[in-house]
Length: 99
Image (cartoon, rainbow, N blue to C red; front, side, top):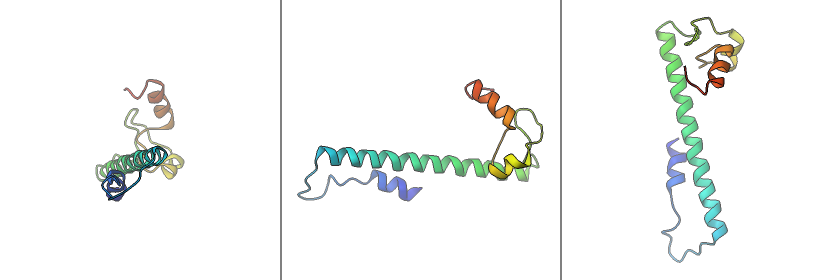
């Protein structure tokens, strides 16, 4: 993540005698934005995994945080950091993520 963020923030504007065209600027801007988005996504995933590890320690792993019902094994196999049953997750999406 740090590498992606560092790459995104690195600028070629300081290079001596560098000729920068508008299309190159657009490409660099796109790449910078993409790298920052990837780093943010990775950071969020690491946060979710850390929270799942805490739930294991607290013995609440595999229980829906909304309904307190068990999350099906097939869902946990696909998304080990899942916080909600599929039904609860759909309900949260329908509400715009608000409990």
